Structures are given as C-alpha cells and as structure tokens.
Length: 339
Image (cartoon, rainbow, N blue to C red; front, side):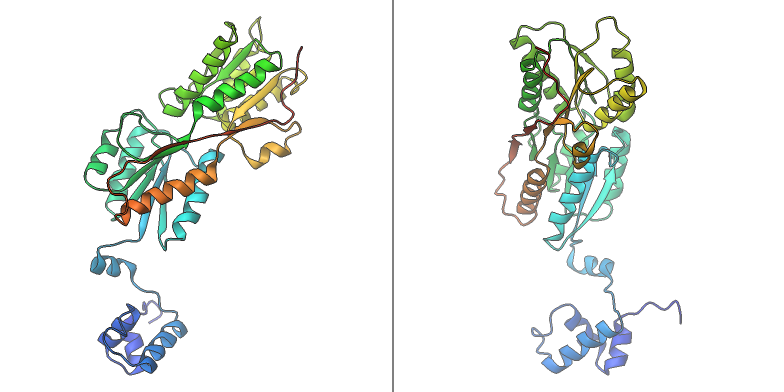
C-alpha cells in the first residue's frame, strides 16, 4: 500500500461519487455534464487533500497534446546559452507549457540523436540553436509540420523562423572601438568557424580593420570554449609582434584568454586590451570590468517564444519570421587608449 499511486478511483471512494463523475470534474468538464457545484467542490477539495497528481501521460493520449516544447542549445556550460535557456523556460511557463532542455555539446551527431529522442515524446514545438552547418534534419521536421524557431545560430538559406543578433554590426563596432583607441595590431579569437554568428562576427572584424586601412590583424581559434581562448592567447603572446588588443568572439573564449593573462602576469588594460562578444553579470565584477558586445538575450527569448506559439496556435498564417536584433557595445575598463 505504501507504493500505491493515488488515482481517481481513490477520490471516487473517498467522495462516494462515481469514477466518471470524478474524471469529468478533474478534466474541467463538470459544468458541461451538469454536475452539481457541491459535488464539483467536494471532488476538488478531496483531490487537494489527498495530493492527487493527474497522470499527464494519460491526458496526452486523450487530447493528443503534451504541453511541452523542446529547447536544444550547443552548450549549457556557456553562460550565454544558459541565460537563453533560463529566459525561454520562464516565457514558456507563461503559456502553461513546460520546456525539455537538451545540450548538443557542439556535436552534430548528438544533436541529431537528441532530436530523435525528443520527437518520441510528442513535443509541440522546438527552439534550437543548431551546432553544425547541416540543416537537413531540421528542415525535415519543419516540412513535417513541427513548429520550429532557430535562435542565435540559424541557416540563411532555410525558410525557418529565427531570432538572432546582428552579429556583423556588433563585431564591426567592437573592432572600431579598439581602432578608435589607437590599436592597429588586433587579434580575433573566433569560435566554431562554420556557425553563422561566428562567420558574421569574423566578417565584421575583418571589414572594420580593412575600412581603417589596417592589414596587420590576425584571426585564430576554432571553438567557443575556455580551452580555445587559453591556448590561442598563449600562442599569440609567443609571437615577436604581439597584439595590443584581443577581441574574443564569446565570453567563454574571454575566460580562457584571461586565464592565460593571469599565468603570464599580463595586466588588462595596462599591458593588453580585451573586448568580448557576449555580456554576463560577472563581467562587471572582474578586477578589470570587461568591455563587451551585449546581445539582447531577453528580447531574443521573448520574440522566439512569440513566434513559436503563434505557429502552435495556428496564428502564423504561413509567414516566415526572421529577425536580427541590434546588440549594444558596453564600454567598461578593459580597453586602453594607446595614442
């Protein structure tokens, strides 16, 4: 008896009412079946007193709905994606849904496997930051009618809704800020090279340098990780012509960069300037607060959920929503003027 799971039979026995009456009341159909208010209240009070939890799986079978959406991001270790997940989960909750959150670990095979497993759970929509440059598995689900919205990373040639930052403008303006402070030997440490945000950030960095007539910049790296930032910084600082400033394309890369600085007793900004893509609360509390390109995480989350539920509720009218939001350059104390 200790392992007995409470069900509507127990509520029927406790109230002296039929199982069908209890079922109809608990499914919100008491008025439809003209069940008396006193009986309805008795059933509700008894269910609360017994801590009755409805069988959601059984409800899904009856209604065909799961009230569940899935979110797949490349890495929950990345503070940017952790913030996105938190904001999206909060927005989804407002619709009475729950979020199934998964991490692809920047691995396309894992992403595809996660999608297969998630689809078996009857999700009603998907929000995804794709980790690779292949879109066939996402396009197939979209063509089958699954509501999908891409966030941060997306495919420019794919007719799937997306919400992202104007990565090109953000990187261009961050690089321009370094140049305006006298830096002409700037290194960029990039992330996953094939991802759309990375490609656009690199292009913004390159164009800002070349529009200023600077040819001495360098672009290194291949991953949005602390380790990538650390290794590439160590290598950059072994060169004869060292950069006077580094632009990291994520705050995880910046963390690795700062680890290398600490080991080599290099001070920010006295010895080298640093600016990064992505903001986070901790950047304000570093010994030298870090200048950054702040993405509008809250707006990305809110708009993505609005797009998704407009499709789930058939309010989309087949329009494809694709939006780039403007980032903000936050100037703190990590960039030194050298002229």
